[in-house]
Length: 106
Image (cartoon, rainbow, N blue to C red; front, side):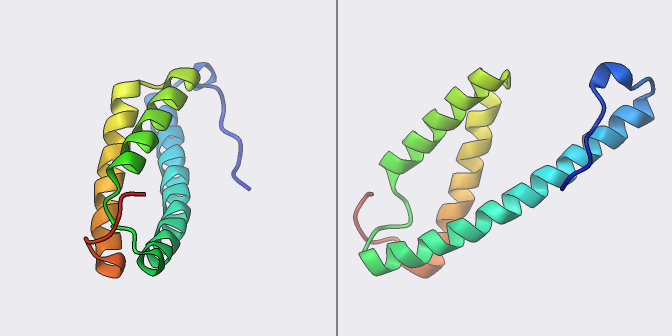
């Protein structure tokens, strides 16, 4: 389990804020790495089911969901959407090695 961080208002130095920010980035990378294990599994299932790596309808649904979640949590929707698109583009490239470019949109 991750150690709790102080509230930003409780941190009195830039070095302390940087340390907290670095700790959050480390956690984020760990979460993204865990997410990638699921993405890799999706590639295997898509290949088996004849679904293309690029699924435009799913891509838009993910971006919309991420933007909505960003709004709810106070994060910037445009940044969240851009980050989601980059992750999806990289996922498509990764999946294409397994499932290929051909197949249906699902």
